[in-house]
Length: 100
Image (cartoon, rainbow, N blue to C red; front, side, top):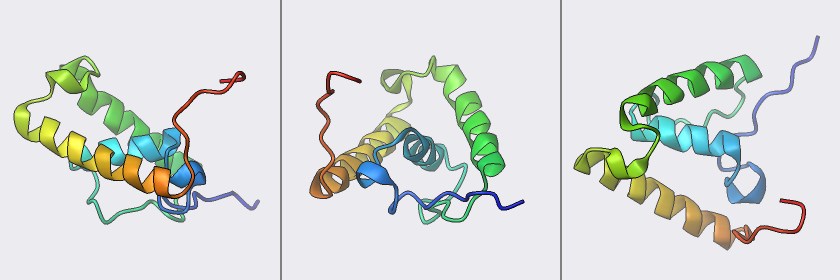
């Protein structure tokens, strides 16, 4: 059986502005994986395990960035501002279409 692997956050669609990429960025915020880890080549099961860890890490903060402690909030903002800039430079458009 040939399983598809993840392309990596920097090779992902929309300049890395997908749901999987968000999980990876959040994992960086909580130091679940190093910021150098792009998850390229990961199997779906590995991404699922990471998602579960990220979900658990967000729970004490009610899944709201505004409830993060200042140091994590600053890290969250830096990582996401960089992602938005990278995404826009690669053609990502944050506007929702009629089908979104």
